[in-house]
Length: 148
Image (cartoon, rainbow, N blue to C red):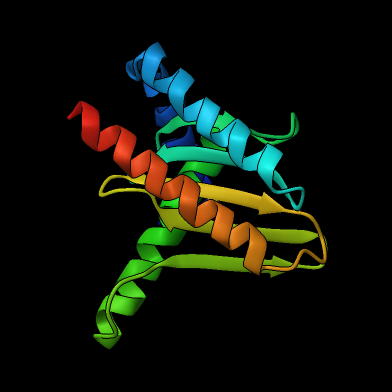
């Protein structure tokens, strides 16, 4: 049986192989949305857009963070959250929030097949980053709906 790290490594590798499949124009527009998100909310330090199957589409990450690895982990986290909510028959997942002593991570749907992952500073008030992330996820959904 594979460990979680081995599975994340495998999906991360697949993300890296498929990262060139996204059009440069779409990637540039997504990166622009991420740049705006980060510049409009000082508590957000990094963000990325990935597919629900763990492929990195666009990112604005701190250099020590691997976009392909985080795409894989974000996909796994939100899929698990979706299954948990589905099992309880309590609607649908809006977002998954992880809080640590050094910052927070939000993962949310950004349309039917994309995810937005947002990283915040330690001690961030969750309201503002969540509001900005929700707006960005709506922009991402609108963008991808307009091209499909």
